Length: 125
Image (tube, rainbow, N blue to C red; front, side, top):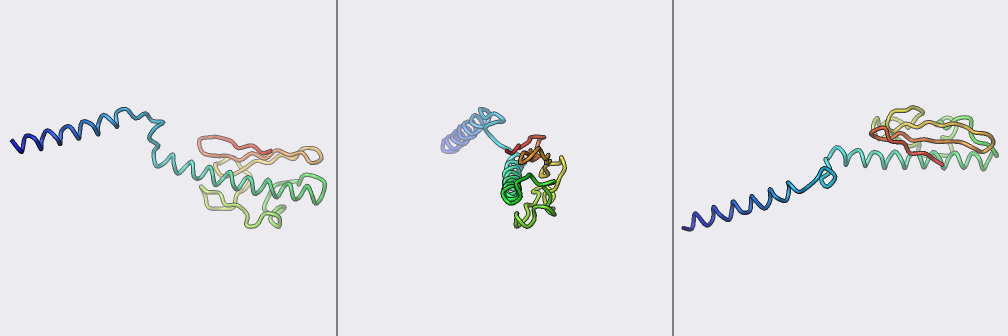
């Protein structure tokens, strides 16, 4: 009798745990890989903001947007230079995750786009 009761309790516990998992959709339980991508995207966005700050400082000092948003041009204004969270190399012009594209406009105009996981983009300003 005692064994039957213990077995019944165990089966009910398993059934309740399984029912709880079955009700979870893919949006409710994030995989570790997607959480890592979220963290890397956040790091890349922080790097883009640092580069944008360097661009704004360059504009304040010269009255024009920089010819390029590279470490060579902005490195004295952005220290330390941000790291690409995917490659661990310094962020650079490119379209891979953790890289960015920069387009100089007229006068003080510019476009800075960070490239994130899954082909997402993070545009500044």
